[in-house]
Length: 441
Image 1 (tube, helix red, strand yellow):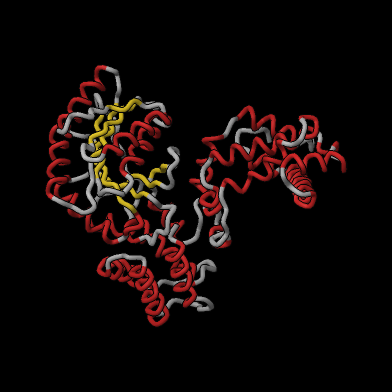
Image 2 (cartoon, rainbow, N blue to C red):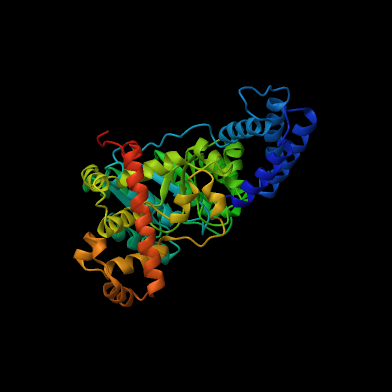
């Protein structure tokens, strides 16, 4: 995510490396490089200029205090301005109503239908609501079928009227269905086109007028950059939408849409989405996104993801085993399974400060663990519980059963032993207690 922009900004900050203070001369060179990096990221030139003018104004004359270098000072200023540019703080999302109506709009291919499913799953799992998905794309039969499949996948009912060619009527009927079935929120997936046209805009406006939605979310393919911002402007003039959703952030995202859209339409980004899995939807925190763009990681989001999978009783049992140096292969496999539930491994690693840059060219995904899981699955329950049982003959059987060779198996067992030693040392220094919330100190 934003790798190219991140690298360009890092290069810009190098202008200040070794400088004892900020001056008009070194600030001018840095600001010029930042502006060029933003334009290359498909940010409108006027927005990039306004942004860098603010940075220059704040930076010139600033005194470097408390051992903060000019480079660190500039990064802090840029972080603050990026946060401001993207909306300053988390935007509210209104899901209250009888039922609450959420209207989803955007161009074809932006990811509206997938997002609709993700939002339904989010409201069901994290907010305890009972959503109803509404298929209001009357032109593309595949959209109705896709929504039906997504609904089955997440256990959410889908309102479909295949023969009805009046999208506004379908949406209005869905409200009555929701009331009859005690659904407290409906999510209306509307039709899109490859480009803005009057038929599409009139239809979605009619749906808005017929349903009086609490939220109108404009879905943007973040890979389309400035084009997406221009489209958002047209939609906003017609619909006065309440917020923006950025999709496909796992792709080759330049960053133009994320950085420009709030400035252009003065509407907040409310959600960000990546991948096809239904649990890959996040609230948009401008400050956290600014940190990611600057390569500073996002520990807060990483911890939140971990806490979603955190089982207090299980963690207590695990801590007890680690304290007694009894951590085994079964425990390790359980931790891998929980780690995979948190999301895409490369994205998670990228949230750790300094790690994103190190792994940007590495093909790292959840399938990377398949070999390890195969080796553990080839062990008997006794071998998983007591790694010391695994002698040469057992190793041969495990390697054969997992489709691995002896070198790979020995390397894995060695890494496992090293990890146990590290946990043992952490236990001695009480670092373990500090890392496991809710545990005894």
